[in-house]
Image 1 (tube, helix red, strand yellow):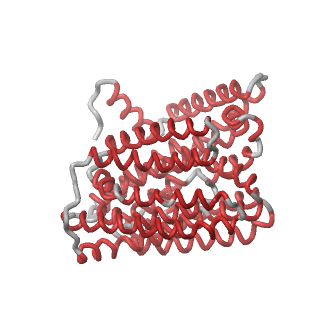
Image 2 (cartoon, rainbow, N blue to C red):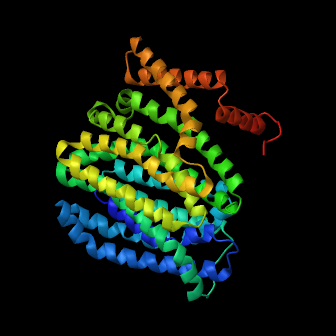
Length: 441
């Protein structure tokens, strides 16, 4: 499944076609727009599925993994299923119906999880993961159709399609470049170091992605329609960007730093000592994930402003550096390659803020100044967690609990002591929601 990651990622973007992003960004969407996007997405889904289906033998031959042919063939159905729900999901996002989207996500994850775990326990191996992805897509699509009142009509407008595609193709190109080069590491590790090392790397990537990439996706999904609705008000847009970035720093900095510090007891407690090889990979990947949500905000601003051309330029520059990293480090080992990812994450932050400064005057140094207090609080928290290592503990689970509680308590105490703005805003939000007070604007 790790070997298929790059093909699945790119194919998913082609199916979506950038048209759903165009629907969210465009003001005054018509029925011709939604119908045209639906039929285009459905068509893209069928075409991509056929391409992947007939490419299965070549993919299996590339990795010299015969079982991959059957897995790829069956996985091709994923894109037909996903193509049928993209427009309804875009409408929910545009209408800020995140409660409905959360219900869809929870139901599909639980349903597919029960199915795949049952199959895994029955000995179906990798096929349990294949069924998990397909059943999750099917359940998600069914839920979206049940929860959405919109139904496609027998209307297709080539003019509407062209208007949406003129925005969407640049976003597809940009995101395809991003996905391809992010997953380039899977290809290189699998080809150069073998299936076992790819398994360890994939597991470390998954443990890092659960918080970092999930938060990035949530931020992107929420911020894009909100920023798009105020795209003509630069002062309000700048204030919203600052609020998003500081709130993300408040949460993501200690989360990623905490994962790096407690990586060993975390892996042993969750995966057992057989997976200790994952620990150094996870520690470096967690550092690389420190700024991921902030990348999402800066790139989301360009999408909301209707500047996919700038988004594409940045993507080309950033991922040329990814190629350079792989070319320089692949023969030095996986650790060197991941260390290069850490450096690239920080370099990418400077690159991604270039046009943010030009468009809304919120560049890298203003953003660094805004997040610096949260970085300092995170460093202090790490010091407290490391100090707990002097306490003799008998099990990895107990060590994880003690270090985790020490980290959370110390970080909250530091933020409260210095009354860091994002922390105080979060406290007011929580108090208003659960304490019966008036909810802040």
